[in-house]
Amino acid sequence: MDYLKCVESFVNTVTCGSFSAAADKLGLTPAMVGKHVRELESRTGCTLLHRTTRRQGLTDAGLRFYQYGLQILATVREADGLANHLYENVAGVLRISAPVVWGTHVLTPILSRFLQHYPGVDAEMVLSNRKVSLIEERFHLAIRVGTLNDDGVIAIPLAPYRMILAASPDYLARQGMPELPADLQQHHCISFSQWRSDHRWQLEGPTGTQEVAMTPRLMVDSGEALRQAALSGLGIVQHAAITLQSDIDAGRLCRVLPDWQPPARPMHLLRLPGKQQLALVSSFTDFLLRALSDK
Image (cartoon, rainbow, N blue to C red; front, side, top):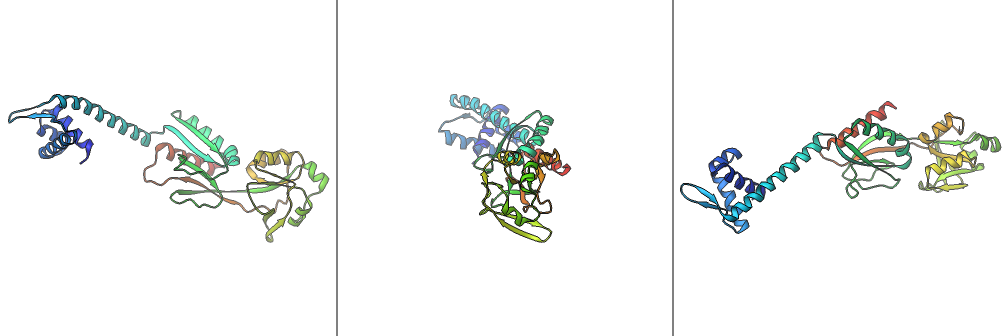
């Protein structure tokens, strides 16, 4: 039998003065209220109520349990109120994981605007290129680039993660501008070490897909280090368009083989399943999707 229901029946019996009055308040029968009280007495091993044909009163143990029961029910109401607040109000701490580059250039400004709009929300953003576990690491949301192999999560498609090739004007002045993908074999290339590709760059263009075998002059596991190496004139970099576009617009870098680019990588927003989502999670999800659609 539900322990909390037993406590609720006992407390209301004492407060209302009888099984019948407690039953009316709780929407139960007097017999069920009496059964709840007897179950509580059986569980505690104590007589909680003195019963006579005319009235019933508290025993010493019953008085102490009544006081505890009031606290128990108050705590339950407080917990229910907190849960309802979290499901109905945009408040709390949002935990979200995202890849370093996308999180830095795209998610950070969007999340900052969201926090300004909702003063009751705090956030913890973890930027990492590894695949996190939403359940084990207690994330509300995660941005995932690449193929999905997560069971039991809801994946919302986002715009694909687009890559481009670029190099500094200084490098291109010294080494020349490639005209075909095969020309990359004669150039210094800068590669992201976390994307294992057997030293092959796959490019899609007007005549289909081509793979170019090359030996990277530099392999590095940092997106910002890739960018800095390209800016310093080391060679041709394959990197996210969102990272390099401002440098291209400013003339610090130039697009290389603009008709050819690496295959776009699928990207998703992941969340745990459930019909009812925290208002915090659903509100940020809507905010993020609207912001991305405006880009």
